[in-house]
Structures are given as C-alpha cells and as structure tokens.
Image 1 (tube, rainbow over the protein chains, first blue to last red):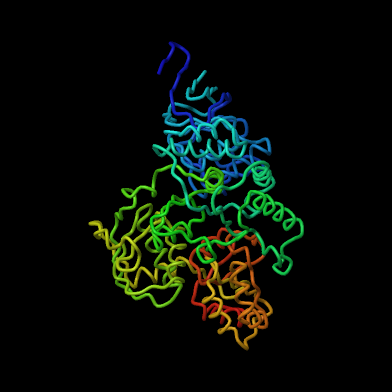
Image 2: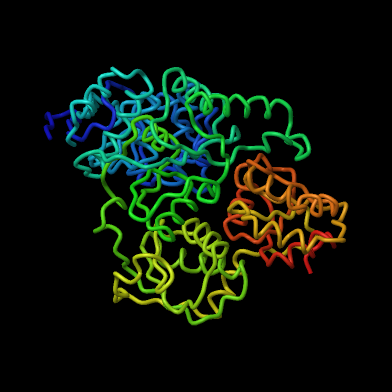
Length: 137
Length: 398
C-alpha cells in the first residue's frame, strides 16, 4: 500500500476474479448483497428491505461489498443488469463467492477480491486494473 | 489450478465460445475454492429454467451458449415456469409461454434432456455411490449427496451448464472426503408421524445447524418420499446439502456421531409448524409435489380424491415430472384426480411458476413449498395429504 502525502491516494492488491479495467465512483457497503430478490435488474436499485444501500442505484458504480449471498439465480440478475445497461462498472469484494463470481464472468464485469473493502469510501474515484485497485481521491 | 493441455486449448477457445466461457467459470471457481484441478463428472442437473427468473437477458445468454455448445455428459433440466403442454389450463399467459418455450428450445439445442423435474433421480438420472457429478437444485443435490452417496457441490445454473459443456468440475468442497465429515450430532427424541413432520424436522435442523453437516440419530425408519421431502426442507432452511442418518443413509456407518450435540424434541417440531403456518382459513391453492411427486404419492392423492369434489373456489395442483404423469395416465390415477377437479402441473412447480398475485393462500405437504410461496406473497399452511385434500374439498383449512 502506498499513500502520497496530502491527497488520499492508495493502491490495493487483490485477486483477479475477472480481469479487465473499470473506473468510476465507489458505492460501498459493509453488508453482503443478495442480487436475486435484492437488486432490481431493470433499474439497478437495491431493494432489499433494511439494507444500508436500499434505494441506491449501482449503475456504472464500482460496487464495493464484502461478499454475495442468497440464491444462485443472482448470477443471472447481474447478467440481466448488464444487458439492460444498468450494471455496475466493476465489483470489489473482500471474499468473492459463487453467485457474484459467476455473475461477473458471464456479464464481463471486471471483478477483484481479497481487498480490505473498509479502505474504500462511497464517493471515492476508484480504478480496477486486473488485480490492482487504485483509489484516486 | 493445474490444467491439462486439452483443458488449456478449451480455455483458448479452440472448442468454441460456449466451452471457453465454461472454462472461465470453472477455473475461476476452482481458484476461489482452492481446487488443484478439474475432475470428470458423470452427470449434470441444470437449474435456472423458468423464464420468470431468467428474463430476456437470461434467454439471450442461453441462446449465445446454444450457438456452439453441446453437453458432454448426461444432462437433465430443472422445472420450467409452466406445464410445457397444458400451460393454458394453469392460467399462464401466452407471451410468458412463448418466451418459456424459447428457453426450452435453447436447452434442447445444447443436447440437454427436457426432463423439467427437480427429481431427476426418479426418471433416469440416478448417480451411483461415490460418483462425482455437478448438480444444481438444492433438494436434488442434498438427496444424491446424502441418500445415494454421490458427490456434488451445490451448483448454480451457469456453473452446472459450464460443467456439462466441459464434462468436468473443479475438485473442491463436497467432492473431497475430508469435507464430507459430519460436524453436529442431531438427536431426535420425537416421533415422526407423516410427510410434513419430516418437512418440519428439516426446518428445525436447518435453522439450528446452519451451514453444517448433521449426523442424525434416533430415527428408526424412513422412505423415499419422506427423505425427498426432508432433503428439500433441511437445505432450504439452512444446512449444508449433506447429512447422515444413522443406520439409514450410506456412509453413516463410517462416521462417529460428532461431539457437538443438539436435540430435537416434540416441542421443536411443534414450533416448526407454528413458524411455517400462517393464520389463514380460506385456501385458494392446494399444491402437492415439492419436490415433484413420486408415483406412490400420486396414487395416494388419487385414492384420497376418489369420488370427492374440489371446491370451486380452490385450485388443486399435482406437480410432477412428465414420465410420472404418463404412468398415472395409464394407471387411471389422472382420471380420478381430474374428475375431482384437480389439475396436473407437469414440468413446473410452486417454487418457479409465476404465481405472484394470483393466489392469496396455499396449502401444501411441503415445508420448502411454504418458503417459496411466502416469497410469492402467499399465506401458507403445511399438512398431510389427507389435510390438504380436505382443505381442497372444503375450500378452507380446518
């Protein structure tokens, strides 16, 4: 990890789930996300009752969360979002599991895990480049 | 993960798009879970068939794979969102039916058997003890792991498809004997009287041994139908898709009861019923066959419905696979059930059909059925076949 003086710039090294480059504004949660039933595939809005991101849209965001949960149909939910043009630009996990991994692969969403997600704040400008995550500000 | 030369060529796209995409999925999963290689599988069961869950995007994904993808092993299919032949009678709209048929066409093109059942082990996809397979559908995964002693992880639709196109799956999780060791001893001190009692037991154990492998003692006898129902329930409500019942399921003789003990008493079964059942009396839908009915269960329903008339306010569905219905046709069970006003729901079930908003309440023999019906916004009652038939005839739960 490197941090330049003054501005908040940081590099985090993780494990590639699906390689690729993505950049955008971070949307961060400390809670797991269930894509099937928890995210609307048409609007990209998080609809799980009581979730701390409830009502937020994940479209074009770098979505940062610890891990996925719930039905394996969730992989298809990510794919539906991609085809509807409302998928997240990239995904960063602490520990990626089957639903999110398979969803990212079939939807071509760059995805990296083994990242300390608490280092990334909502609103940060974040780049994923294969296994490397850069927080730009 | 180590890849053979042949697997590397698949990864590079030499066998086309479907195989390349499949290899990407299998290798990623293998890396996540620390598999050292891929192993061959004997068969595959693919879930994610209902258009209700797939949408147009999912259909597009399947069509892309069907372009150049052919399965390499025996592959069967989970229930669809409707009866493929008699969808009109179940109140399915024509546009949904059109889209569902396109999903089925894509699977057919891949060489998958259009079995459309969650009980493939009853109609010709029956693995043997110790066989490595790659199945989705949690109830079937639990049945073949526990009752048959085959070895599979709980796959999702796309990872099962990937295994079918490659004929292999990453070697991790429940494929390894060291991960199949029971870690909680569940002592049963209550008597299980009928099918829903087994569903209630599954609820009770699932809730208490979340993500563990139970070793169950205190059960004197079981049957195919009871184990089928228990498998669906225990995994729906929280356990790993593997359990042992002392003296009944294979492998139970090899393991000692674990040190950690929980006890299931009369009170726990009663509490399970209280959690599963809602306060409702008018019953809009009665559905049996979650998991899909065996021929013995259909025979029992026919006997109970003989010379009865189902209430005009209540629908009665028997969910089963097509071959089971064909046997029921020949035997006269179908005629008896339909004469009473019952309907067959082949190829589909209460968990995946688009039922949201159509019924306010459901009565069923299945604890898993209650879980999914609640997700569809229905109030639920679980009871024996006798109680369910009585509810259908009276139009209300007594």
